[in-house]
Length: 476
Image (cartoon, rainbow, N blue to C red; front, side):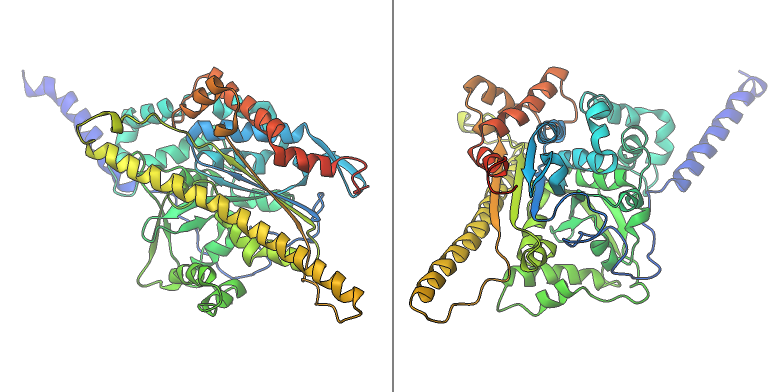
């Protein structure tokens, strides 16, 4: 074949090669922007109880924790929101939906999709969330996106990976290019906490301005889809999300919570450990970048952020200031119980299965302990209040000096919802065997949504809460 005949093909191949090289060179992940000036009163932060522009009451303070678990967790948590929407209560003489009294939602991995969507769109979630996310085969769409030749040049770049394709898909088809600025401008509850895991330290990372302050970064400009992508970036399937750790912004000051924690080694080792890890972000030279993976690696049920807020953060301050009277944590745990095939085989499992089991077993055990820890904290608080009340009543009867009151009294409630509490054996087995993926049948999605209402209807703790919130219970 002559050169004249080959020339058009050579030219096209050369042009394609140039395009591939240029595409690879220009492709890059979304960078978090630098914060120019620090202002503790601005940005997306855990609202202090009593702040203005809030329609719901602070005296009834409800927090939801949505666990990880792919579409399974997203559908289950959506079912809980539906049931709370359909549940009417009376609090302080006001009749309202229980959903309208939710103050914060903590979301991990699959649960972060539902948390973020409700935070952005409110009741619109009940109109289109199923079609826009739950009933889609997102897993297949991600796979096909990676196979699309148009994306190969970008994937050849060291600064662009599968995680960035996932961000684009979620941004285009689910979250409509919203940033955290849109959550700030809403000025309404619930406050949404999305979590990831710092790959270097294994610690939780919260997408809040308080956390971004330490990175010298502005969360308001950060895409919500990017945060959700980081929260659901399961190892081996997706690459980490990378953040730049910028220099400290103008007027920056370490928060009082961190300062108190650094000084509490002897008194509160948990707060000290948390404060040390937070303070590590100020080592700009040693840690110029932060790489984030699936939030489930550090807390697969999203309860640790609420625990910290209860121990020493905004919730604690609300209790101490007598703004919070009843504190409710509702844990939506989409944990499954996979069939044990390892114990039925004399041949040791292969390395991939060992790695998977090692991760999931540790997470399940940690999740159980997290729930029990928050239960114990609430029990201790209630017992202390009751003991003090008994002592004071006896001292008063003896005309003695009473003990000082606690800074704030609360009625704490912890409600743990998981598939193991379903009474029907067949239904329980079906739900516990659903896979962790972003592809479920419409029937499976419906079963998960229905499970949310069923578990609330059969939860003794939830029914006791409703009884307390019904007319005639003393709240009118």
